[in-house]
Length: 340
Ligand SMILES: Nc1ncnc2c1ncn2[C@@H]1O[C@H](COP(=O)(O)OP(=O)(O)OP(=O)(O)O)[C@@H](O)[C@H]1O
Ligand code: SF4
Ligand SMILES: [Mg+2]
Image (cartoon, rainbow, N blue to C red; front, side, top):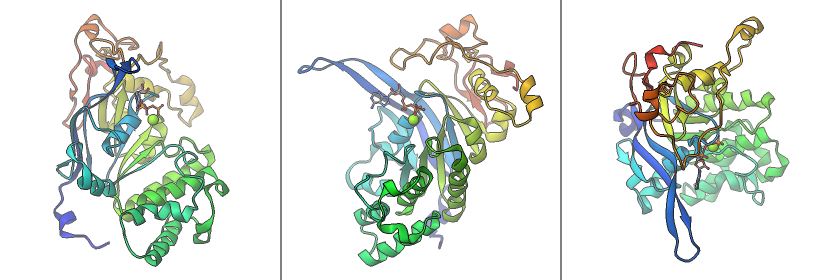
């Protein structure tokens, strides 16, 4: 790819998210609807992603990971905050500006069975975005579609087949080809391998990594599984109940966590050595994730935190730098958190 002057001078930071909130209103009444509260799915989060890097986003089910992804591609209008993409605030875009931005930021969804319309051939599915953005003649688009199928490891002869003729792993390759068809710069991959058989997860992960090199892609990689994220991410952000509670370089997060929630997640990642695995302490969190409609006061993790003290019920810990500028955590007792 020929590097344009624009990309050559572009800053290292591709995405700079500041104070992002996504609240869904809860309403009551049929004709006269009243708002009676909010689901605070994403509750004031900030993070950056450097060009060409992968940020892994982890957290248990319901923590707000998908909502972040959907808000970044502006399927939702954020309640508050800025989404600076190459310095331009995506949160403020609409109309043609939004349409052009959507070319540059694409999302791959978790379930390749639900995300591909069964009534279309894979050729139409992969080429549709190129037709929407008028990226060439019909012949050029067909040729590029065949090329994209090759790039993701599928035979171009499959172009006129339908999604039901493919396995889960192959479908996810089709979804990836579709996302890449319009040359995006940032790809949000929302649990791209969770719905797949364990045996083919590695293949799809390897494909995503190869494509990142080949097309200079930047990834936000969402997963509830820290062992998957470890393979792909440069930095990792840990989410709990709508907030990022810790963010650090991958190795630092694994070796020196600064938040008890991260520590609990790490303790559940299996280690291949059975001897070490047997001796390890596994931290079982009590209770369920509280509702994002009724977020606990103070530190939102205090209802489940094994290290909680009375201050935690009253004062919300600041999300601040711990050990160097690149490692942030929100815990009053971060310095007491030990490695797993
Ligand atoms: N459109 C919506 N309207 C109301 N509430 C929503 C909406 N979308 C998500 N939520 C709520 O927001 C919270 C976060 O959901 P989200 O899907 O972002 O979590 P997640 O981390 O992706 O979970 P999972 O791992 O299960 O995919 C949940 O409580 C969910 O019920
Ligand atoms: S602030 Fe308190 S409750 Fe919150 S994570 Fe730290 S120790 Fe646990
Ligand atoms: Mg999700």
